[in-house]
Amino acid sequence: MKTITFYVDFVSPYAWLAFQALPQALQGHRCEVVYKPVLLGAILRHQGSRGPAEIPPKRDWTYRHVLWLGHRQGMLLQMPAQHPFNPVPLLRLALATDPRGRPSAAVCKAVFRHVWDGGHDPLDPQRLAALERRLAPVLDANGLEVKALLRANTAEAIALDVFGTPTFELDDKLFWGLDALPMLRAYLDGDPWFHGPQWDQVSRVSYGLPRA
Image 1: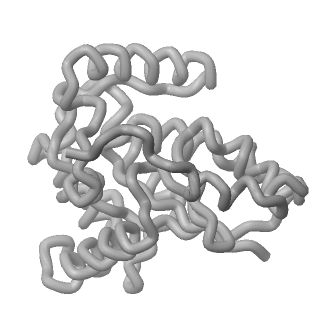
Image 2: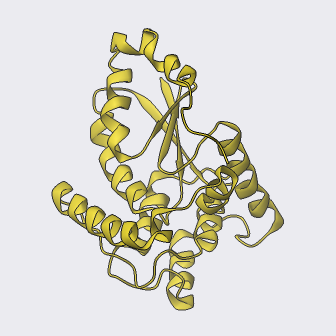
C-alpha cells in the first residue's frame, strides 16, 4: 500500500478543493493518506514569497477562481467573512484530535467546512468552541505538545522543499496544487514518463536573469 502525505493548511481554498477531489484521483488504488497540518505562512516566509491573497489583483482573481472551481466540482465553497486569517487555532485543534498528531479525514473535513461553508468568521470564539466540542480533542490544543507538533510538521515540509499547500508527497516526489492531482494519478498508474529523465532535468535548467 502506498502512503501519501498531504501537507495541508485550512486557510487554503485550493487545499479544500483538493481534499474533496482526492478520493476520485485515488480511485482504484490502495493508498493511505496521512494528513499533516502545516503553517503556510511560515513556509512562504521561508521561501521568501507571498501568498496570492497578499497581492490585491491576484487576490480578487484567486477568490473568483476558487468559487468557480467549487461550482465546477459540484461542491460547497463559500468565502469566509475574512481571508486570509490566522489558521493556527484550527491547525492546533486538528492536531489535538489524535495522540500522534495525525488528524483523520473526517476531522480535516470538519475543519475545512468550518472555514469554507457558510461565509462565517473562522476565528469567531463561539464557533471555535463549538468546533472543539464536536471534534473532542484528546490533547490540549494550546499545550506545548501540540505546538511542537505543528512546528515539527512545518519544519519537515520546509526541509522537503514544500513551498505551498496543498502538497502531496509520495515516494520522495512532491505534487503541488489541485491541478497536480492528474499528475499524481498518472504516477500511481505507472506512467513511464516518471521513470525518464525529465523529472530531474528541470533542476539543471540555467537561471537566465540577474539575481538581486
